[in-house]
Length: 109
Image (cartoon, rainbow, N blue to C red):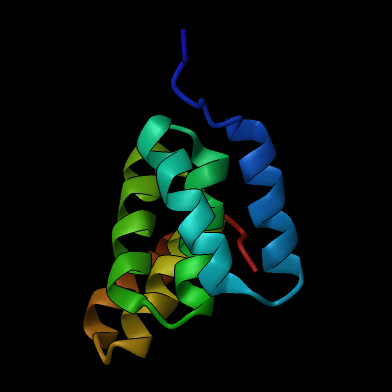
């Protein structure tokens, strides 16, 4: 009896993280999207996916991932700063301001 192939989510996450480190965000995003779909509240995977989208200039997708991450972890200064920068790259400076302020208050670099 054939069993359906199961993705080892942790291995896929590590593979995508390596691709990010190698400067290949498009490939990392393709790997991470199913990981986040399988574990939508996994903050590490969501952050890596947001980094991959941002790094490959998929700004609308980066914004979506970062918005989800901020909703899950409102005190995540990195996510706030990254969301602000993503909005700025889309020429939405006014929307970025409150996220920069929260990031500043949280001491995010």
